[in-house]
Amino acid sequence: MSPVVRVPGPGPLAGLDPGRSKCGLVLTDPERQQIVIAGVLPPEQALELLGCWQGGVGLAAVVLGNGTGSGFWQQRLEPGLLVLPVEERGSTLAARERYWQLHPVRGWRRLLPEGLRQPPRDWDDVVAQLLLERWLGHPLIRPATLVEPQKLARTVKA
Image (tube, rainbow, N blue to C red; front, top):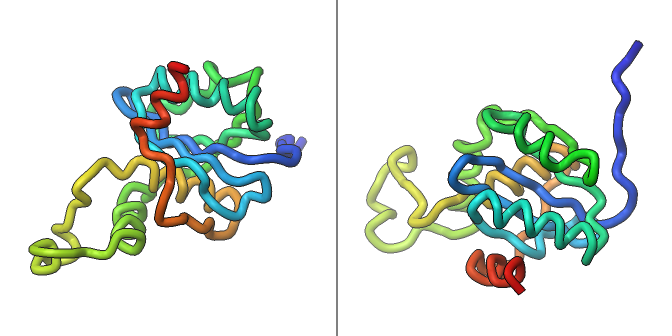
């Protein structure tokens, strides 16, 4: 018997790069063409925010990286949310490269070889975006201005 393929209904998708101390989290627009919210949050805040999105914006599903800790997250999110696991292998290195495409290197970092450049902030949200793109099969537009992680945390507490 072949595995059951779960397909989300219409509406936005969330991408989650799960972690023990921090998680990358992004939300697409309802047409699934661009990122509208992105941030790096502590796990409990990410979980709360996913719950808010489910009730508030009609979240269709969560695309979850299948790496370390994904089983824990899948158990916490299901059965309330549709969870779509996606291969996470190589996503951190790919996200570092994408980070520099989104935020071109400036200043003294231009002098470093590409392999030695580390983004000046956590880039788990970019990993979450790449996971979503892998599942969707197409790149997502990422506007220059997005909701900042601090504002994400405030929306959870409000």
